[in-house]
Amino acid sequence: DDGQTRGSSRYQNRNVFGSLAGPSMGMVGDGLGLVGDLSREFQGADEGVTGATVNTAVRVMPFHNVPVIREMLNWYAKPALQAAVE
Picture 1 (cartoon, helix red, strand yellow):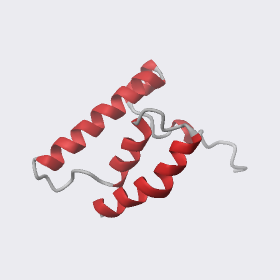
Picture 2: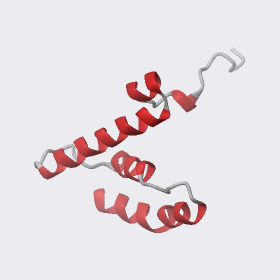
Picture 3: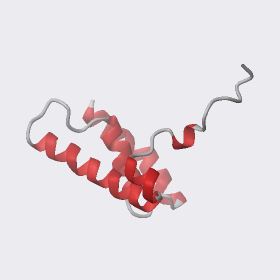
């Protein structure tokens, strides 16, 4: 095995919406998952908001890919949110 048989990890964590209808629908699926996680958290479930939820929240945030905003999120907001979840 020369390592050439592995699939691309870029598409490994895509949801069904993103796989079938493209990136815009994938973001809708991510947003729906985020709403589900938040509603479970407010209902007092054991598995509500996790570190993955924080990552999703940052990913679906408008203008998250603008360099200045992305760095602010990565340096300040994301670590604080991750610490609060754990």
